[in-house]
Image 1 (cartoon, rainbow, N blue to C red):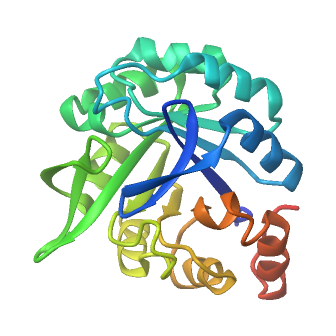
Image 2: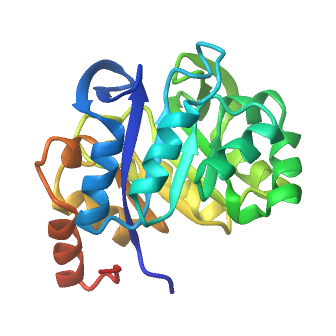
Image 3: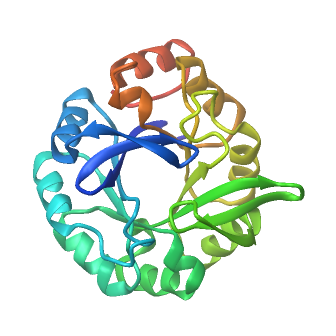
Length: 251
């Protein structure tokens, strides 16, 4: 069994790290390069960098910020936002990203996942799934949570795996920023449906929440933003707590 990963997420808008609740009410959380460098010293296992308005604003991810961040950190860097074709994958990987996350573009052209996996390898291809509860299950949302696609999140996870996706970044829109805990039901369903790593995202507020998502689901990594950005918890505190609970984490 692989060690569980603890991953800070940098949601970036207008060149600044921001964080909101349920994808709205954004507040400033610092400079992305400085923030990434801080997490590098804290012992984060990876960094996820999401240009959260790039797709909605129909523009490309800010390559310069990615390049500056990649020069400062010495851990895997996943970049997403505004990715629309295979050339965007190339640009991000050349800028220093280790993996590229795609959400909106994959829904619009699912074979982009297959083309990218064929070109760069599945290990570079992450599909971000923003899911929200409905009466019948969970739907996939795109454009930074603005558009309901009507696509069932569980079926979509199975499909992107079959297309060559190497990892899923699963965000519960219902839990996002609430600090009430990860969406255990959603994460458990998806992790049981696919055989690729799942990064659980959205809602973490306490040390117990980290333990819950690893003990109650098949999540391979836990992602958080608010807790880490505003120094409510450190990466080290989370890892120490999980080790005490018998959960294998890197150090």
